[in-house]
Image (cartoon, rainbow, N blue to C red; front, side, top):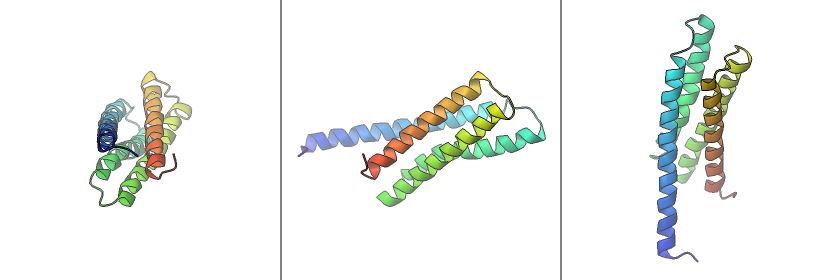
Length: 132
């Protein structure tokens, strides 16, 4: 059985991870915004920009919103939405690379970060659902 001190340390560590994830998602949103500003001013890119902006910033928005959840179930739901948004972001970045030949280091770095965020969120969900 965990002592009170161990429980507090575990809760403190979880709090640090959650805060770190929120900060990382916020920074990711800023990187996405700056990247979108570099895309060509063509109609096709407007559509990609809009979808990418919505899905990428939704990751962090939902992680932040989870902080104010009214229940564990509600908290989990926000994380599930964040994971779906991360998956959608992966899709849009992949299309930029494969369909529009934007194969820049920036896109690859953003794609890598999206995949890492997805893994962190998915692992958190498994833990919250007691499946790990």
